[in-house]
Length: 199
Ligand SMILES: CC(C)(COP(=O)(O)OP(=O)(O)OC[C@H]1O[C@@H](n2cnc3c(N)ncnc32)[C@H](O)[C@@H]1OP(=O)(O)O)[C@@H](O)C(=O)NCCC(=O)NCCS
Image (cartoon, rainbow, N blue to C red):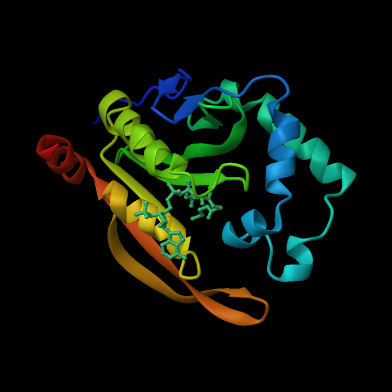
């Protein structure tokens, strides 16, 4: 059996343009604004159409999000880190390892960056920084992700980071009444070691 990954530690990971850090007080308000962005809702599958994507958040949902972020540092089976723009210090999004399978040493990976941080190379830096932590410090064997076929920007960042296309769930999602494929990408420790070794 593989040694259990230590998700209880919430590290600070420093890049050139980004800082990945534990969530702190005040971050929930900012994350709430990011999660309310219609593009974020559309690309993360939190809305099924434009109307839902641009609907205001209910008070209940806001409360749920506040308590969600207040509890991120207490999780021992997953890692949620804030992504901050190093230049401005501003919180722009998050990276997550969840759905840990201890036996296989695998996790699911998610990232989202709000409009203030997008298209500036922050994702290109944050993804490999987080993967490095996953493979080198957490000792993971496999990292999986899913991305909609209407999100080529995210796909580009994943492929640049070394993820390998493993399959397509055809017409797995529906947005504005149109079916959309979900692509499955994966990265194994051996993929990571090959990339790290060639740098
Ligand atoms: C996906 C995401 C993390 C990428 O981070 P980012 O900081 O915006 O991305 P970067 O600026 O580092 O890089 C974007 C890359 O995509 C490319 N790109 C942008 N739009 C593109 C498009 N329509 N088609 C193909 N490539 C595109 C850019 O040219 C750049 O690649 P390059 O550096 O090789 O030129 C971020 O945009 C995001 O969170 N978006 C909203 C939520 C989301 O999509 N989450 C992922 C769900 S699976």
